[in-house]
Length: 600
Image 1 (cartoon, rainbow, N blue to C red):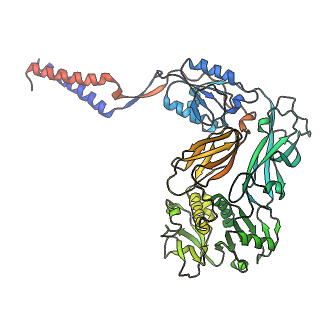
Image 2 (tube, rainbow, N blue to C red; image 1 turned 30 degrees about the vertical axis):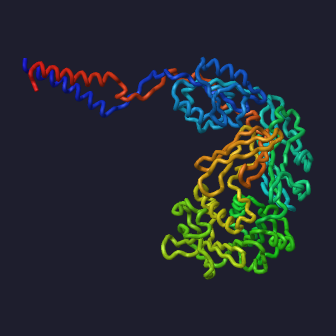
Image 3 (tube, rainbow, N blue to C red; image 1 turned 180 degrees about the horizontal axis):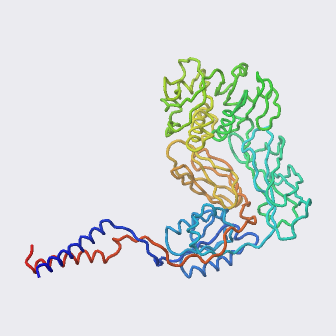
């Protein structure tokens, strides 16, 4: 009898301890059948659903039928709650919507026309589990303007060069021209309803081709100015494709270019000879200064024959002298002897070639200087080294803003020096290969931009620089995509109230910048003059009627029934209530048995 009592107590103790160990370990197991979450239907709300051949009404009916009263989300350029308004998104991005649906749980269905733009980013396991209903668009032929690339800032007398890409897509069998019979069309450049240029072109059978359009200096483009800006005005050029037989979709036949026009360039860059450093500097100056930048290059020694860097057209010495005299900031990059007779009136940025010692020169964190505040937060150890460093002439009045050390060893040598004499500010850069920061991209590119912005702000002294705290990332935006804004000022981004004036009247909105200094607005197509409620920010942004969604696109997904309603889910052992009951019951039974037997 005593042996049976001992074995029984040991069994109860082992059961309780085993259950307790399992609860402490808490292993997880997968099980099938967690389908109690409401079903979710993802409804394609991109512009293609309401475009030529689109089936929006049928998509609404299909989504409601699949939902059975449960949840419906709209997806396109973003993921939003369900409503029956006409689609308005300028992209069909399924990946963010599917990821959000997977995090929510439950069965998923997708209703789309099949033209998914980010299929490569969609997790295939999630896509295979979803039910997909495809409502393809009816086939049609479309001729369109794909893109227009050109300058965003011009000065009086500048030639405007536009790179126009156009093409065709779609079409029923038998609609396309025969071999060697390309469709004809006309590219037209309009300014406020006035035709400036037209050119007959032959369209490809399918795909996209490009051509260059050149607008010579004209009072129509360079003045009178529209809008209000201390350094000039704004003009909008419309590039349109006309006269294409059988074009079924007119909403993608035009693109807009927004030009900021100034009477004279505020910054002139003289490069003799030009190199990669001057090329990256010119682009960054245009971005950070937000004023007119004129780039003149001279490839021959002595700098006697100057050319416009944008057009390679010869520039007369008298015109170069006038540009230098009128510039608030002159950049002299190259052979110092070339600029011996240059007499600037404003600030000067010197980037001499001279004698340089090649090697891997690593830039050191800045000491106290007028531009140190703008360089706060730069990860200096992660920047690529500059390839060469020259010697700066000794100057007791100069402030050394940046230094560099060869292979991170030895004494630091000056890389950027600042000085001021007679009210004229000067900055000198002694490094070669600084463009590698911008070329690498990411944090290095931001460091390069911060350095150029800091030097420009200090050199201009706030007199000519726009002083803008934020700017639009692009001034011409396709239909259905947000107008994105970037914070430029130092410190933490702040919310800004802006007024938007269009043909429909005045409206106010708030730019809410995130931690990365980005903000978005979603206006309808139109031209908007924006102005900050408190600040100097003024400008023009245009939302085109154009969108890639208007074109006929390939169907990249097929209808499928999807996986079963149940799904695999991870269930922890502590989520099983009976294991707690087993542990408590085993210890309680052992205690009661011991008390009954008179055991301790």
